[in-house]
Image 1 (tube, rainbow over the protein chains, first blue to last red):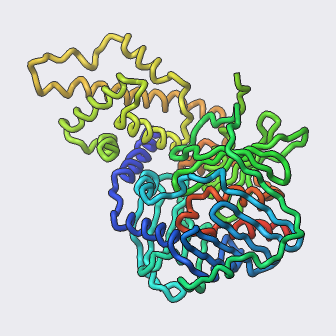
Image 2 (cartoon, rainbow over the protein chains, first blue to last red):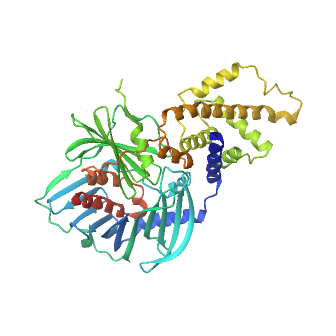
Length: 314
Length: 183
């Protein structure tokens, strides 16, 4: 009975592995990737998870020197995030704080390069879906269906003409939607540099610099890898002004971060917290707080958390 | 190669192709330090299916110990093939595959009862039988950590999704802050 069930899983899995990827769908992914790097735009989008939804404005300016992007939240407390090629700044006007994250540590980080799109096919079936009109754009759906329950699936709607991503739905292994991003208004091109400057004159604000830098976190490892997820970077940073280690694992599309911070005698509740597609699992290992954060199913995040171990370096 | 391995696991390959592939698996296995693509795919697929099937990984060296013992056993299944009879070329690799399958089966059987002994008989476990999940316990639910916006800000920059979606995923950071504000 056990063997029969196992065999069924194996057969189902291998059938999934054997299914050919549509080259056309891969081309669409490359087209979306290219549009994301190349286009200037300005628009309004809604982020939804569960019953919550929030409206934000996003503006992107591209020139030969690189790109600058600004995200402003329109609902609730005002705040904005400005991302340049090498720095992310989060402006919190209520507390007059700027959180600064320099991206030197991730320079050269092989995000999702066009040539890696093909590698995604190891973990996802990639196919073309329906056409649909979204915010005035004629869009085509590209569907990434995960081959196991360790990652989410994605339904991406991109403008047929430009490749610009208009809508992204994340769904779980049962096909249930867990979150979505959707533009309700978008204009491409003609963005002046002024549009991506921060709204706030933050000269007198307190600056919290994460001081992220590549590091080797000696003694820390996973005693069991999660299939398909590989370590992509390891760094140290400051978080709430305390030193923290961060190790990032990714399957090429989803990423999971392991944060490691000294507990200094305090204790932490072990358990899982969720927000849309983000899961956060916290536990204690060797007098350290381990916080695993990822846009992956709870089971993946928990499994990575459970695999974290510390061995005193010899 | 991966397609071929999965076809082999499905029993879809014809005898000749299967024999060639099993030969390749054996070759990979002999050069243990450098796992070849075929063996790598074979193991990965089995590992993934193990994971989905709720099985625990076997102890390090389990396979080697079993193979050693198998080697020490008198060979009944795979008598030495006569070199002159081409049809029987398949006999040896097939037997090897059977041995491998047997190793896998021993693994499942050995783990089965253990699981039942240790797993609490709760409805969650019963459900796990129907819908294969990993051998993770049902987690305790806790509130989002107070530093969630900071964790997300630190994490988000490493999400490959940014390559497809620009910084829209950073909206989650903001959303987490809103969550925090509601408490």
